[in-house]
Image 1: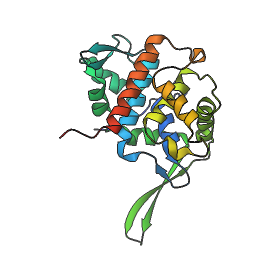
Image 2: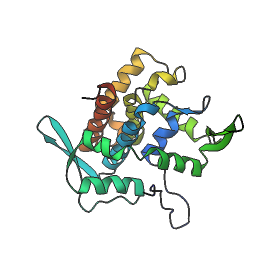
Image 3: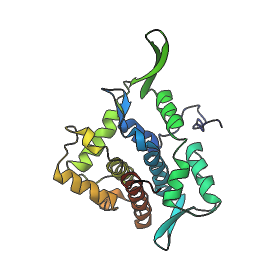
Length: 236
């Protein structure tokens, strides 16, 4: 199956980055060329996709016993191909958030990374080790976008700035990924930062986030599901 890539706009330029792109760019560690939380990355990227859909009111949730189901809003398909693929999957029938994460997440890494490469945010080079084995190296692309995103998240978590809804979701997902300690000392791993991150996880974003209560609830449900998926051992 060909991975879905973002369609350019009428001027031939790529559209605005998705939340999954912003999150993967933050998780990329320029010093080592690695991506933090690689082992559970597909849950986190899927969470970002669902959160993006929630923020734009393309999906909604409903209780189903002890679980929460997520479903597409009819007639509200997103134009972005990665988001549209997830929306189409959810349009067939409502699914538990956990099931949606597991279904949507596995194929996301490569197309999301490819978008960052095409934007110039990350540079990928192929090289040979010992003249025999081909390997891939990732480097910072020098656009400065990762630093700007990190600065926005830092202002929310460290300085207590009331975030825009998108930044609140991004910070909550970063917390949900379990990788936040790796951003120390840029984002200090302190009790106040942990407390603030937990507030964002619960959807307590403050008035400045300017998002409807239902949107916050859906996003909080998604982030909580990511936390559960990452921290609980798989059932045999």
